[in-house]
Length: 143
Image (cartoon, rainbow, N blue to C red; front, side, top):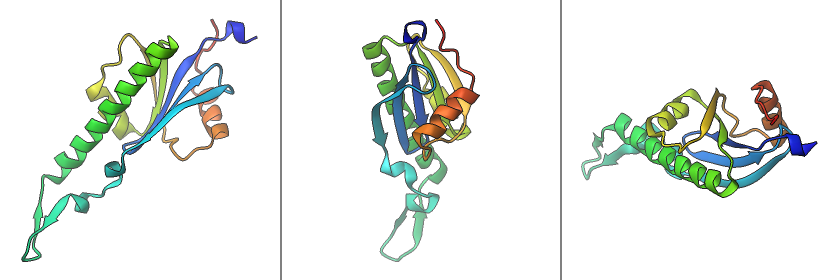
């Protein structure tokens, strides 16, 4: 049965965490790697500096957080490209919140990959919930 089923890379990510799977059908997932960016969890107020007089000197908060997210997105894409080359898989489904999908799209250098995006946060999902989301996305695993 698995002879007629193609493989697909599955990325589950947000601005601070990413897990990479190779799937051969929605119920046959193998975890390839997980990465975390602790800076991605920082809040806006964490991007300020306290001076000696205890006055906050704001950095460009939005751009600082955005830059951090873009840096993480670029790292995620680099790893995704690496796994695509290693596994010879050319299709990827990305499950991520809309904001992080936007960051990925800004950095998109997914080399010769067919990309399917689902705006859904599955970072805290278990494997059964991920499989269910893959089924709901109606991905075509048939060769």
